[in-house]
Image (cartoon, rainbow, N blue to C red; front, side):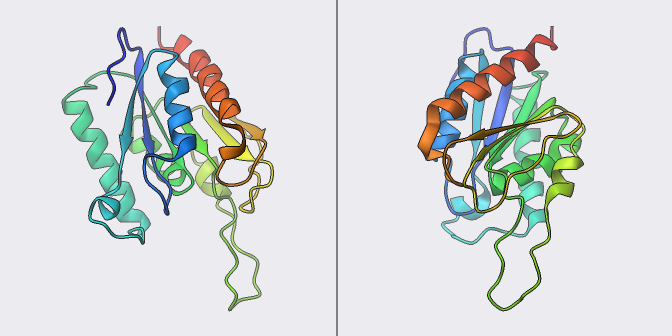
Length: 192
C-alpha cells in the first residue's frame, strides 16, 4: 500500500487468473485512483502467493478477498469508503463480494463476460452478466473493444467504457488511468 496524504477512501484491486498485481492495467488504475487521493491496495490471491498457477474455486477466491478486506478494515482502512476492483477474474471477485464487503463502488477491468468455449462442446458459453447485474453500487467497466470475452452492456448504475485493445487493455493505458480517475473523482464527491 502506498500512503496518499489526505486520502478520501481506498481502492482495493485484485488480479486476473493468469497474472499478478503487477499487470499494467492494474497499475494504470492504481495511478488514476491515487491522482484522486485514494489509497490503493493490491491484493494477491493465496493460490498465487503459494506459487500455483491455477486459480482456486470461486468460493475460495471470494473468501480470501473478504478476509483481506476485513484485515484492512481492522487496521489501515478502519472507516474509509472502499471501492472494490480488479482485472478479469479479480473483477468477478469484486462484483460477487461488493455487498458483503461494504463496497461503495466496483471497478471492472476487462470483465470476462463470456467464458471461452471449450473445444469439446458446441454449446455457447453461458454469460456472466448476472454477476455484473447483481452489483447494487455504482460500477465502472473498462473493456477492450476487441476483447474476445465480449463487451458488457451499460446497466442501471453501470458505466461501460470501451477502449482500444483486447483483454489485456495494454493498448491504451492512458485511457484506463483517465477513466478510473474521472469515475472515482465523481464517486468520491458523494462521500462528503
